[in-house]
Image (cartoon, rainbow, N blue to C red):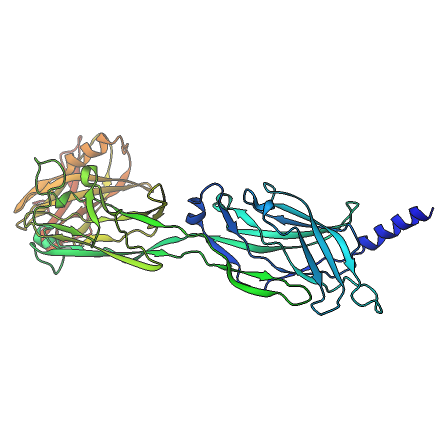
Length: 479
């Protein structure tokens, strides 16, 4: 009977134990994501530990369980402290000793059991409330951190009979952040001048027109964390940088710009880009062009010069060949950063684009053009300049925009008809516009002062030609 009463009394004392308190007075370690990605399978990533204060009464065989939200490194259980002591930070204070019980590296679990109590002041009686120690310092499985932003610790308190009394946490013991980020400092922003037949930018010369793109790759290595060290009957101390961060080793960088660079090629016969006097440069980087000249890449695998902080590179494109016509367009791109001896990489798109080359051409609307099999449409463009220019059209019909359709060039000092060319372009792509009326929008690679546009139609059953209004109201008469 006495034995039964003793067991119940012990269980009751343990069951009213309050949760512990976790306090961090140190810097939590931050590992670089690309660093842990390239880490070897057995590499251990250090974690930061915490001050642990017991806030209730504890008895022998009570269990402290430490639950980490990431697996522990292989072999981590063999290097942890086999026991730790919690005391009141003063000489001759009450204390308890926890001894290692078991653990699960894959599950990220450590368990300690209360194995000894010490009444440091016999006249006052033993009291475990307010005793301090530090949580174990464990190594995390580095490869498992790549998909995480942080690793958390939760401490659970239970009796030796499995009764869960409380838990505290989670608290962060390790952060994981991307080592690399990219931005555009200066975008492509020139305007192609139609007055020179698109052979220069506005304000530039036909034999010397250039634009510069500045892009920035930022490297942020991991941040070392602090470790708390607890000695007997004294407050913990801080070992600054004791939890060393894992950072990547940059081994190469490739910048890619997507656009249309055919205007830089000076030969229709020779294979590959033939720049002639045109230039494309980025200091210390090798320039190359992809198939169809739709991509431009600059790369450096020997010495990418990527240092902590902002690394800004300038890409300069200069058109010097007099006969080349510059393509107006929007640019997109990315930077691919290589690490771990070029065996791995991360792609960082320039999500906002790399700018554009606009043009100072003109846009003319032909209003209310009828569509149907019995309608013959006429679109005439008078080019009063000395250079031919390209014509592009879209059709705005019943809340749908069709096109754009490339209609070809308007010859200099002549009137060119584009009605049949528009019908042909619509049929070639399979668009069906066979009823009602729509607005035709013409984009002309020429200054408005050098153009005249007219539009109209004739029904097959009627020989009368009907002129239509345009956004340039000076050209309503058929030439």
